[in-house]
Image (cartoon, rainbow, N blue to C red; front, side):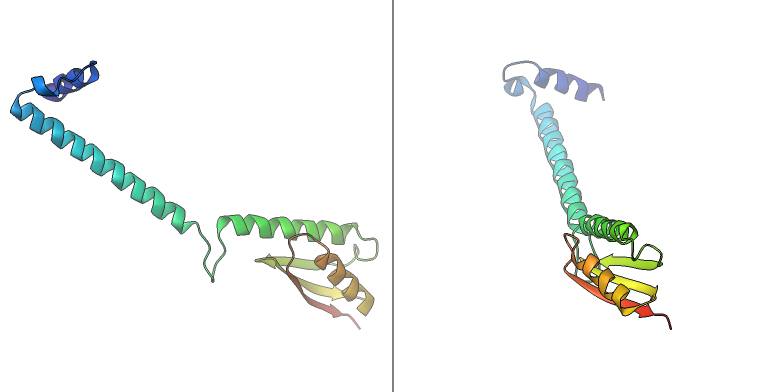
Length: 136
């Protein structure tokens, strides 16, 4: 360890001291450089693989899409709750990749249509699956 400290001190000074080292010290310094380079490459590969794992696939959404879907769900729910005609109904809202699914029971076909219009009116919604049922 003491030898590494001496080598580090020599390299940390200004000027080229590599030529002043003995052959064994030069070999150790080269091995240390190779080891450091290997560790840097390994860390870079881990970072790249980690970032690639965050991407979305066709079967699951990535972190960014999940946040976007939850924002859409929140906006649709708040607009449904703010509508005087629909606020008394319990309408469930779920969003996956921009597709909003409405489910629950309402009293009329007008309420079904109105909830669908509100869902389609939210920014980021690609389509609405309106599975609301009319109670009889």
